Image (tube, rainbow, N blue to C red):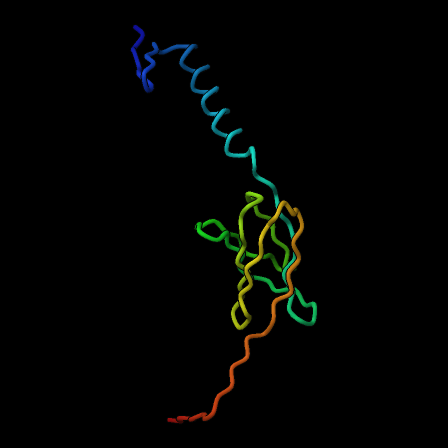
Length: 123
């Protein structure tokens, strides 16, 4: 016995037609999601060109991001209009526009702070 299913305003009976409909909807959604996406690769280094493993690359306004590998390399899918935030502990964060670039290499600067007074406490 075939069961009847409704998807939006359309109703279908189970069977081969439902499988075809499901697959076509799935492929359409994936193609629409990937239509404007580009793959961006790059390397994050410090001022002396040493790789920064564990640096964070995040797309501004989203929770999507990646972390660099042991050699400072990263790969992330983004939209051409996106902005990336590059950050690493002890370094100044940097915001960069993607602008259709597929390779973005970044050199982060040290974050220095001057202290007027230091207090050392020993137990």
